[in-house]
Image (cartoon, rainbow, N blue to C red; front, side, top):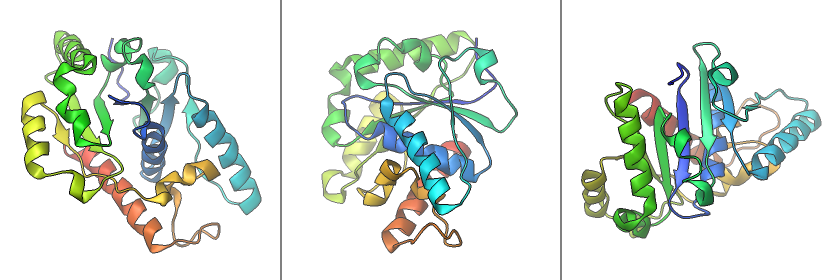
Length: 229
């Protein structure tokens, strides 16, 4: 059964593509838009560590930042909330198949890639079959299409060409979101905060231009996911 709460599934074809970093930065961007964020992150200690560091960061700097609520399942009673709620599911790459039922409940599926080779090998990868099954399950419930988006992470301009990207997009039926550059600012999660948390009038943050660019990139990605369906 589909829940009324949007579920954003973040996954990858290969490990260490930056899923958790993206998930937490995306959560912070949604907080900035007044969404209540719940996170499903099985087998992922990084999210729990982030929350502990975030609590310490807020205490040390005497500021208030929003916190995600961790959930253990996708039962409606666990995730349904007000109309401004959203669930982000950070799926471990090694367990994509195990969590196929989560893919089937997605409102939006984000596939994080950090090289063109990941897209070029998709047709031989079990991941594509996983997405295909999810599309069929969603169609069986009367949903017209899966909002499938590929996010080029650790973006490097010389690695990608529009011809490569557009060819893969047409072949597999996904859309390409604005890529995220390889910025240290996205890795502030190790300190308990995210690029979208950083605003110039908050005393705890000393923003560099790199921080400004990172914040703009994650907010642009959120706008792409939310408003260009």
